[in-house]
Length: 354
Image 1 (cartoon, rainbow, N blue to C red):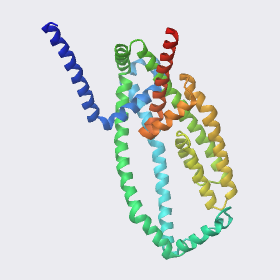
Image 2 (cartoon, helix red, strand yellow; image 1 turned 90 degrees about the horizontal axis):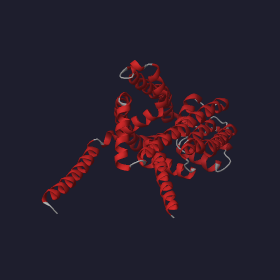
Image 3 (spheres, rainbow, N blue to C red; image 1 turned 30 degrees about the vertical axis):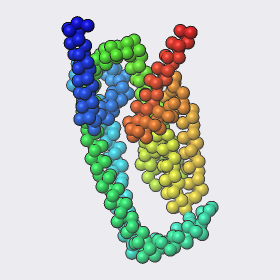
Image 4 (cartoon, helix red, strand yellow; image 1 turned 135 degrees about the horizontal axis):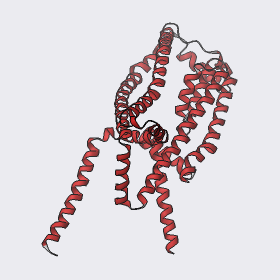
């Protein structure tokens, strides 16, 4: 082999090694903010059909005004419900502190519903009498709660809120630039996919987009529907703060089996008021709503566009949430959609060659 050819081969190897090293270094440096970029991409994909209509109607505003308006609306869509929840939580905290002070001074009398429990009512009532009914017992239990777990959890919550606030702000900033330079970004990714994967590159990109939109329809929209239905049920059953609890249910319903926790909380609030029958009805209706949504509506919305089996949809969602948190709700099904497409291409190619 000639010397120029050796140098050319060496240069190619050095270029590949340097490129990989720089990519790894870049991911290490910006790893904290990488979820913000992924969130910005997911939001941009979700609102793209509506955003394109706005661009066609107001072409003069595509460079600044439309990205700014879209980013502001997304921010308000997240911040307004959070602000309402924070105000309601602060209002309830006042009553909670008053209740804790009264419990320390006078103890916590046994509620009437303890005697109506179908199982272990005598044991629960005896434990309550020994540990909570007297001021000494209630004060001791509350002191255990405050001295350890409460302080630690409040510190973790504060740090988590600060980090998530920074990530959310960076997501909005990234979303503005993604919307403003969308055409350039899409063209660059299309060229990169064509160079790396050939004709399959655009198909993979299209599969990811379909999966993200299907996931949004199947998780977000269905979750909002579940929350709206359960808010009506909470209101009819007399659950305290039905609208707030319905909103939280909508968020929890985006995660499979997550809404069941809210049904238990709502049932517990009703049991605390002595309405055991209403608590059972709320839980039964909630589980029926979840069953219909998870087994009939979501599989069609999430798997229909990408022809993804429901089992893989469920694995993608649950595995994604476990590994990536809320971001995994969208990344998990998208990854499964790409994998199943590659598998079908491979099996189809093998069958055709035979």
